[in-house]
Image 1 (cartoon, rainbow, N blue to C red):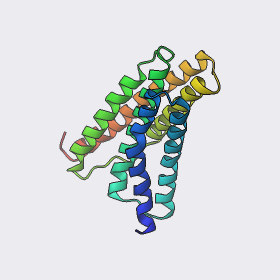
Image 2 (cartoon, rainbow, N blue to C red; image 1 turned 180 degrees about the vertical axis):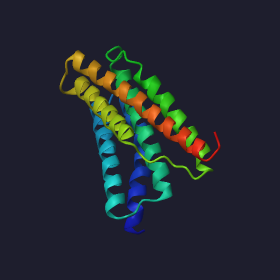
Image 3 (spheres, one colour; image 1 turned 30 degrees about the vertical axis):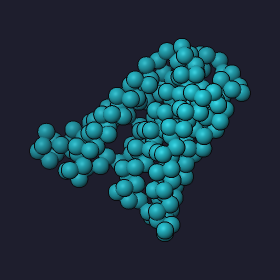
Image 4 (tube, helix red, strand yellow; image 1 turned 90 degrees about the vertical axis):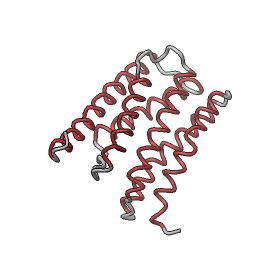
Length: 183
């Protein structure tokens, strides 16, 4: 194994262990689930950093990293919302799930035209804000209760960023198809 494989191994690890967040939460191990979520979320920053400094960005990494991010965020958000029913009445999970299904299916369809959308600032902001919300929800339930207005405001911000990032990726994909005379 060379150092160039390390970012992909970290991404695969995040993908494989993402369901553990939900399983721990469902089993009543809330603090442990929150800690696993935070560690996996930090691994997202680590694999991206290592891929850049090692110049180890690969087509596999460009596919597996966003997939692992989606698995972690959806697992974490579903788990945290399961814990705190009613605290976040924003339809964030549903919108995030629809966005992610659309992005994965769209990416798979556009891959045959050699189009892999680059991560956007909106996508990164969405990932960060949802990860922060999940961490806040776990902290709220275990160690440090936050004001409900803060949690709801953060959930609303996540919803807005999710919609903007969805629109951004959609526009880039449609523009690509149009420029190639495919759409």
